[in-house]
Image (tube, rainbow, N blue to C red; front, side, top):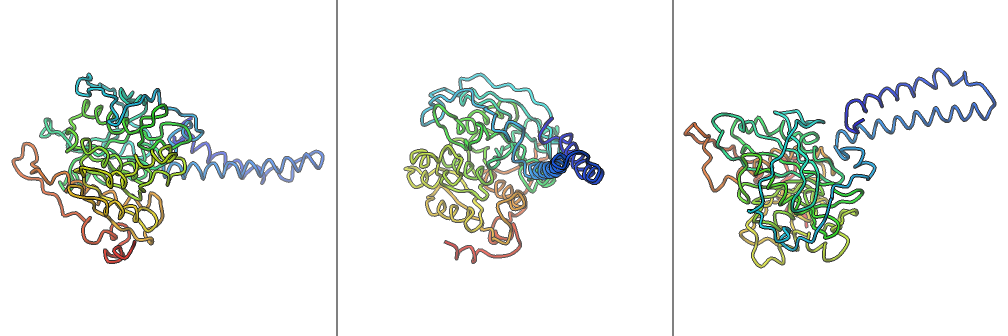
Length: 414
């Protein structure tokens, strides 16, 4: 029975009803020695408490999509077949252009949000470079199947969850397709393909976006294998100009790191409540040594870069939850790197989906402007332009989450 499926949830609800009814019916009817009666009543109480805790956990998990299956929850899922030393490039010297195309079979995704706004497609991908075998979810924009767009190639945003987190979270908890589809139809936002690969690759640890020989090649999984598969199976634009990466929490850290480390693979990144030093996540494999911490810290990468990467970064955060890290990155950035810091006041809420969900639309408006700045968007077959609405990611970014505070307030923060 699936951890996130309706049958499991309904079973728990039924058990909770039974757990409440049992003491009401049997409490005074228990027979036998005093010790046996006491033990029976204690068991009824424990059963009631256990089912209640399980139901609450399941509802919270379904809402925030922390654990996707029993393997994730119990720490038994291993999606790494091998982790060769792939070198600094993350390709192991493989000529990617000479590899045969990756042809995948897709099926409709199941779970919260996976059927909304046209539905999400899912496939099991074996990474030829990374040695990872895991699911990849793909959502296609409304225009993808329209006859007028039959030869059009679409830009892509690779979206990453936090840790722990499900690859379905952007479709379910954040409702990204449901929020963005109407705006894409109206031409207010670029019709992006939204791709979400699994990021929980080893049991009980955050593999993040690091390549660690002998353990995991998460960077190559996210920045090489997944993009190649998408470009081989869909009408996706080529990297780097057609690709961006976005994430929240641990996924935000990865989004910034991937874009800064691989300007040849991504043009832009969105980081919501991220951090720079991977050791901020206690279970991060990349936070276990000074060398790994430096190699996976976007601030350090920018500081030490001889040639500043041509990438655009959108970094949002609250005080003590992403804002200071974002400002550090902004100070380290040099042209052509651009950094847009969005201050979110503490009154907007804590480190939860409720904070990040309202930021999805503004972030995609910003992506539309940044990734469309060098080309004129014309609706295929119409001969006319498809103008974008003005972005709200400008002068008063704090309003994105709460409607309060201003850039002046943000400027006063360290």
